Length: 163
Image (cartoon, rainbow, N blue to C red):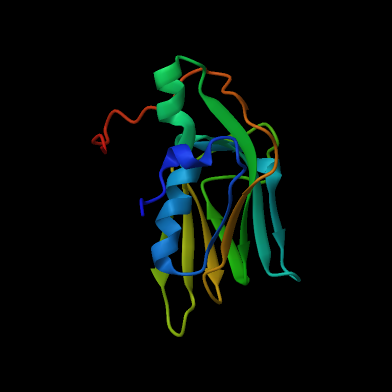
């Protein structure tokens, strides 16, 4: 039996769930460098849900695109956090519709009895903190992939390459 690889995903839309801390790095890697207008964030306190409609780079397709010489792709996806008790932000105005945000990473700090804090780190020193009753994160692609407008893969020259 072989482990799954990124190439196994091909054109299949992602639909992933993180219920444990060990699951979160997979989702974090797939949403790294996702971009979205500030107006595409929704906090629904009565449902205890925070969601973002974002345009994520298809990291799972990067190697195949490089091998074939075709353009890199993005896809619209919903990143949803359930069982959210409180939302706080720093360094951004969610009402500013002209601002396009870039998600750099997701962090998790466990609390007592399954509670904790998820932190969404944004480019430009912005951050969103979600206090949660438990870890419940969903990433679901909602459109077909489209050519990345820049036609390039995101680049992080200060980070070491991972093989």
